[in-house]
Image 1 (cartoon, rainbow, N blue to C red):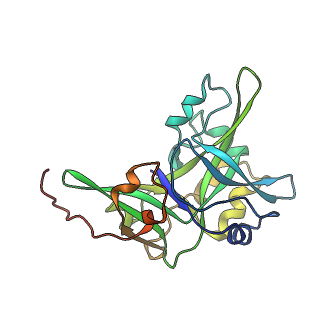
Image 2 (cartoon, helix red, strand yellow; image 1 turned 90 degrees about the vertical axis):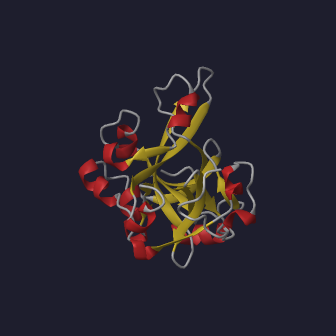
Image 3 (cartoon, rainbow, N blue to C red; image 1 turned 180 degrees about the horizontal axis):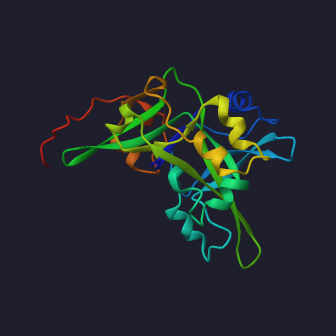
Length: 232
């Protein structure tokens, strides 16, 4: 799954990396949590121009009775996107990129959990595969929200957690965003885990467990907890 991630790249880096027409308003984020606003890249119009805007993390389908539904939809499994009512329409028409430069996952170490920060080997921003939706409340106010697509983890990450977010290779980002493509049979093969050699990770402090702790210290390496930690 993906329950926390980082986006510390500068606005200028993001504009270059994702081919944005305008530089986004993006302050460094070290511990992005569900329910918060996240930067999302979408295409605008048939020409495929890209723009970035903030959406709430936790997809709220257009037919939902309450936006609280989004609390359960921060992730969407790649294997069931085409069949789940909450995601199948968005798969066809409302795909997006969710820029990041790292994500956190927790590994069980005896009676405790060790958080890890995972990113690209060599660093730099990348894009999660995402879906977005729009929901209107009874007063007519519009809410735009998103979810991050997950898949089976690559071999090295599987030692931490069995699933991971889909990090799209730069070569297929345009295919994922292509407004002319609506066939799940063409889209689903894009949703694969990156190979192990593309990824790097290290243990970090359990202070990242707190959503309100959003500081550079979140990224700092710490010693790993032994796999057979004693019971506390």
